Image 1 (cartoon, rainbow, N blue to C red):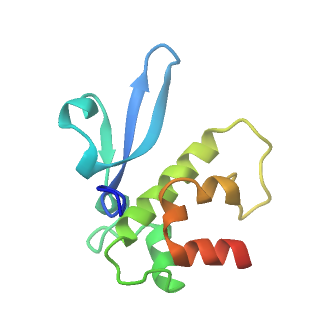
Image 2: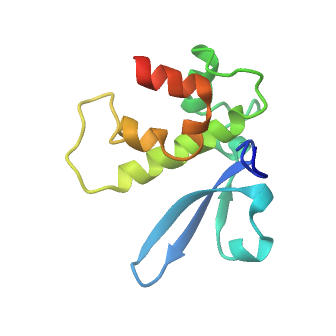
Length: 127
């Protein structure tokens, strides 16, 4: 495995772009990201999405409820990666999905870290 390839430390970085007058969101492995490169960014961790004190995010609840975690080491990174993909998908200019669905497609969900998880890859290709 390549250094930083496990994805356990994935965070969501958000930065305002004054030229486009919008917030750009992207995920990054915090262990490989230099501190100076996140100047002016908002950093969201898995704990920032939800926690036992303030209540868990629906992504956390579904990972837990559907037993999507294996050993649990990389689960926070998977949750943030999925959250980042959902944030990006919601900003896309496309038709509104049916109630209860998001604009995130399976192909978009498989990009990045979620594709690395063998169990999620198996689920997405066989269901």
